[in-house]
Length: 175
Image (cartoon, rainbow, N blue to C red; front, side, top):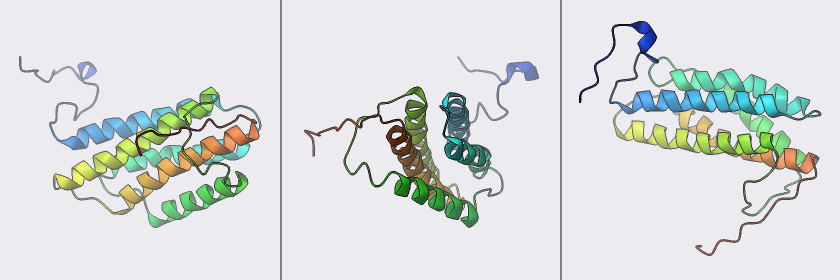
């Protein structure tokens, strides 16, 4: 069967949905990541005004990341500088609490952040695949996406520390 694009706009969820290029997959994925950040914001417990403010600043930047492959670049050095500074803030506040591999566990907001973390990793992979396929984009995109994954992780550490939730070590039998 060959799916035909409907002429009825209500039956088309995204203008590029039937493209075979990875660009569409990247855009759908970063749209999902943006939705996951909205889910984190909806689940944040009281007392985390710093995290909420930073996620609200970050939230539209994910759509900037989304449109930066097909459209013009929307992630700049200033965005990287801001994210580096916020990473450093939470890492310092957490006092290097996690220096080992831990299982992704915790309250709902923390688990949603872990979903964001893995989503950011998928973003890096899709950018790599796009690059391999010949799509060009600014080098700020993979740098931002890599840092984003680490930022989400340090947020999980920070939140769990403030809530006094213990990290559970994962001891690998593989490495």
